[in-house]
Figure (tube, rainbow, N blue to C red):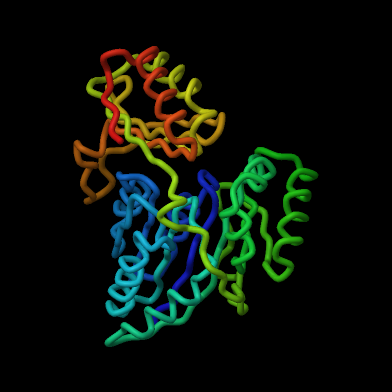
Length: 314
């Protein structure tokens, strides 16, 4: 019998970090379904290097009709492999309000094997949560449809700020268990997650409400100072910017949420795992809800800081 867990949380809350940590201690027969908003699934690339059974669904939300059938088919495939556990990492903009209906559809399509739903884990960025909650309906929906909420990045806030975040979460979902974390680290084995019943709602993830994601492809290696200046200049127009970029002769992982920019070396090989393909390097995926305004701003800032170094893909 396979146990399925859903991992939600807004962009940059730490879902992939939490999942990677969990997979280090998960049973040998574990599968992962990773959903990314962008055309390039960088989160899936990181998980793939841990040797798990992996299905990747990109360029949309698994709770939107654009990917929902593929999501159901992917879960059926993983359950029929007779895995012990399956983890679903949803996109940061996912609204999981109809997860119950999706699991019911999976049960109807199974020809062998079975599953139980272990519950939904929602990660919250303690630092930026107060800013994004009023703006994004998906954040509220993620919390209301969760069994465990991890208030993550507590090293970046005061205990009083963390307590304020917890108070808001409790008002939205009084039943959910709340745990404070840093880097998504928890004592999973002693957690005893309670997957209590949560009534389904119609998801707000629809084709007509999809956010726009743009891909900036770097033709050659930019100057690092110019590249950082470019990221600073576009931050206010995009929910999330991420990718693998060559800087200083080394592949670097770029991850930007709001005004927080992280650039760190990305190891090309780990054990027997393969390095990322060339087409996965030097591409930045940028997510926005502002349409033409953000596209124009991205092009202007790229022309200013990275002239001759880029191509923009719609």
